[in-house]
Every structure is written in structure tokens, then in C-alpha cells.
Length: 312
Ligand code: NAD
Ligand code: MLT
Image (tube, rainbow, N blue to C red; front, side, top):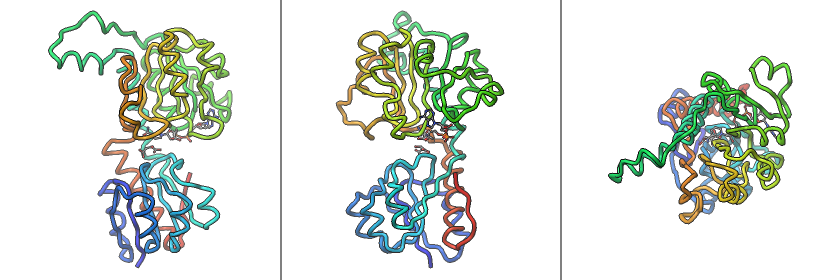
């Protein structure tokens, strides 16, 4: 019998995949801390996580039977990949299943930001009928810069085009031909920050993308622009953004992700009148959670049975 530990909330419909294999036993134990995981991981052949579980080298060292760690989602920054390689543990993700959902969330955030919807909602339900404070801006004819032209970035660009926006893009791995076909004008970060009305980031968090937008970029940024981060906390420098908001360089920001999650209760973003936030909900739809759970469960079964598997 192969034993699989599911340590984050994962769609039950996706986990149904495991019942097709009659030699697999699934245990769901969520909310464990590192020590609790270390105490039990030696029993399991596979670990299935979303983003809450941080899979550290100590957990892998204790996981003497661990053959595979599956990430039901795209980002694998919560798994220590170097340690996984050194312990011979395969890490797989589900790169496609939440692309549309996350691009739709990004768009919801951009529209909410442009029209002050969360702020207006709060005031209206408090009994105040304020039609003066919340004058928004149109997306039509505005320039949207997409940093990271991968699966999600390109879906966001498509939707923005339908809204009449001009799209600029930055991605060192994206060619002029691809950009032309997608109707995107490639530019440098400096050109982008000087021209864009909205900037949305869709890169992974790496040493190259950490604080991709920071003091240096805010210093030359178009005044009154708005920015969205539905990718990973840390791509936009949170402290530098707060200064730029206070100086009126940035008019508003929408963040689904934070440098430390969950943020402390006194995190300044949670109280700032021009920042709107969601709790890392980018991939949280029924469809996406089912998709990623099915994808990753199928791959785990293949790996446990030494069959060929696909990965990003
Ligand atoms: P992807 O791999 O398809 O696209 C990432 C793009 O970033 C690639 O085109 C790559 O070339 C580009 N890139 C890499 N380094 C770069 C750099 N230094 N500068 C500019 N571009 C760079 O990934 P995706 O599926 O589009 O997802 C993007 C990220 O979104 C994921 O890594 C994940 O962290 C995040 N994500 C968040 C949520 C959420 O719930 N908020 C959901 C899904 C994905
Ligand atoms: C991802 O990288 O896929 C996202 O963080 C989505 C998630 O699992 O919450």
C-alpha cells in the first residue's frame, strides 16, 4: 500500500482520483506545523500540499519513504527544491489548472481598484450614501503593463485588450515575434514604469524578481498609476510601495499576496485607504481547485507506480 499525506486543503473531487488506484491510502491532516509533520512524515510515500505547508529540508530528511511531493498549483516556492533534489524526492506541480481563474481574479482586482468597489461597499453598508468620494477611472485607452508573459500574464493581456487597453510587456524569455502575435509592445522596466497606468505582475518569485518594483522604479514612475500583485508577495517591494502611495506617485494598489502570509494584523496594507486586499484567493475557484488536484493526483499515482509522468 502507498500512503499519501494531504497536508493542505485540497479539492475532494480531485482527491477522488486516488480511489481509482486500489493500492493507495490517503490521509488528510491539515494545519500541521513543521515539528508535527516531522513526527509523522516517515510513514508516507507522497506528500500533497497547496501553499500553506512549507516543505523544509528537515521535513524531507525525516521523510525516509518520501518519493514525491505534489503541489496543487503553480508556484513551488514553498518547497525547498535544492533539498528535494539532494534527498532524491521528485517535486511536481499543476501548472495549467488555475491559469484562467487567476487571470480572472487579477481582472476583478484591477476593476475593483479602478472603481474603488471595496471602499464604496464598506461605506454603503455602513449606511452612508457617498457618491462623491469614489470617482474612478476607466480602463479603456489606458496602458497596462504585464510583467511576466507566461500563462497567466497572457490571459490577463487578452482580457485587457477586450477592455480597450494598450498592453506593454516585460519578460526576458518572450520574443518580439510572440509579442507581436499577442498584440503586446515589449519594453524595458524603466519604459514601463514611466508609461503604464496599471502594472500587473505575473512572474514567479525568484532572486531575479524579488523587489522587481522597488524604490528605483517608484522614483521614475508615472504619477497616479495603479498596481496589482496576484503573483507572489515580494515581487513588488511592500515598504517602497507604501512610501510611493504616501507621496502620491501610486494612486492605488491591489494585492492578493504578501511578503509574509498571512500578514500580521497591524500590516499597513490592511488599513491603507488606497490598498485593496484579498487573502491569496487568486486560484480559489471550484473549477481551478478541482483541475489542479486532479492533475497532481494523476501524476503522483504515475510516479508511485514508476510510470512516465509529465511536469512543467
Ligand atoms: P508561467 O511560468 O507560465 O509564467 C511566468 C512568466 O514569468 C514566464 O513567462 C517567465 O518567462 C516570466 N519570468 C521569469 N522571470 C522573469 C523576470 N525576471 N522578469 C520578467 N518575467 C520573468 O507561470 P504562470 O502560470 O503564469 O504563474 C505565474 C506566477 O503566478 C506563479 O509563479 C505563481 O507564483 C503565481 N500564481 C499565483 C496565484 C494566486 O493564487 N495568487 C495563482 C497561480 C499562480
Ligand atoms: C499557485 O502558485 O498556484 C497559487 O499560489 C495558488 C494556490 O495554490 O493558492
